[in-house]
Image 1 (cartoon, rainbow, N blue to C red):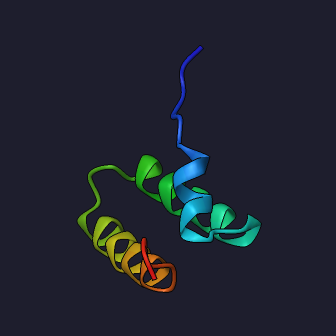
Image 2 (image 1 turned 30 degrees about the vertical axis):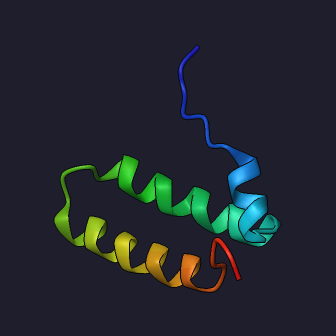
Length: 59
């Protein structure tokens, strides 16, 4: 089989819950569906930055 493995301990350490995990999955899917679309990539970068800003690694 093939796929992407994401370390859930890294997500839960930051404080991500089910909602944030679902949001992250959608963002990953957006890029996988349009890997060459710079507009999508830039939007996802911004969305990821906003998401992780809410959950600092140490804080």
